[in-house]
Amino acid sequence: MTARPGQGGGTVRPLTALAFATATFVALLIFGLGMVSLALGEDVIATSGLGQAPGIVATVFATIAFAIGLWLAVRSHRSAAASEGDSPRLSPSYWGAAWTTAACFLAYVGGLFVGAVTTGADLAAAAAAAGRIATTWFGVVVAAAALVSAWGGIALVRTRASRPRWPWEDEFDE
Image 1 (tube, rainbow, N blue to C red):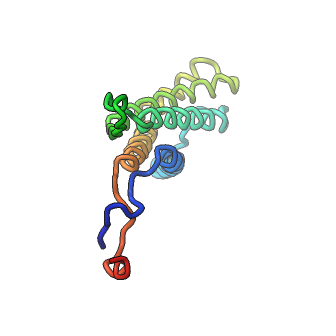
Image 2: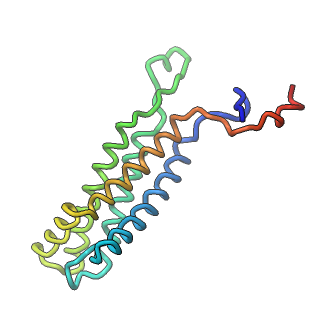
């Protein structure tokens, strides 16, 4: 398969990459937490009486942090040459994935604390639930889902590939 320049190639738009990566993040987060819970035989939130609301709030907070962090990483960058009429785009840095991962992890832990407090848990129980997530495999899942998804979103924007084409597709184009 070959890719010919000038035939529908180019980067994925940042907004499209953001949508795909955010959906991937949520899917990996839910799948990963479920699989770790199954493997360990433990609930994600082991504190009794909290229900599902803290986990939902934590997921919403982490998803918002992911979307904001990734958007800041992939949005269109313009260099100083833009003032001269040229507008070269600078590729987003993969370091954005690291910052997005840190933001998601902190947002998940903080969201779990906020969700636990708003459901009526005392501060000690909310802190214990959030601390357990931060120091167990569940926290690793949150960070890993964010890292993989953010890296993929940045890679979508950085890649300058066109769709794959078989050699016989160009037979009549020459």
